Length: 103
Image 1 (cartoon, rainbow, N blue to C red):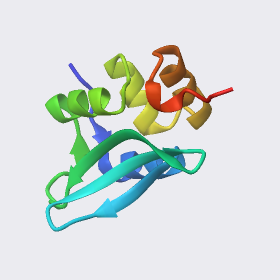
Image 2: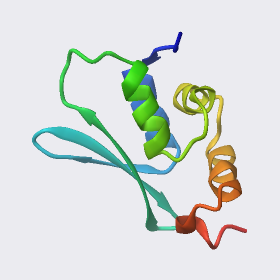
Image 3: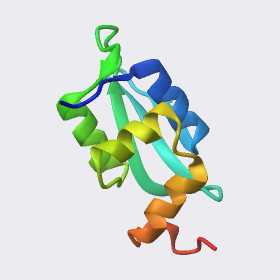
Image 4: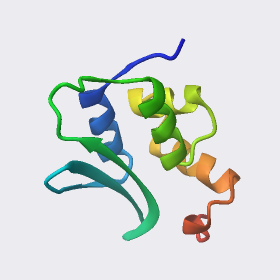
């Protein structure tokens, strides 16, 4: 069974890990930036007030969008045990092309 993650906690985590918030009339988008430029990694939320927790298929979709490998990683990312540096290390290990200049 997949764990649910509090939506507010998840959005705070994204902002704390280098994601920029942008809103449109249907969705809230988070775009990842590294060293002042977008990396091409993004995720989105509905404006719906009904969605208080993230779980199941939405969590799986976010895992793919954020280029993470396991559901455990996405839960750790969204609940904050995973730091921004650890996230960057996961991206670097997967040879994500948007981060070619990571030291």
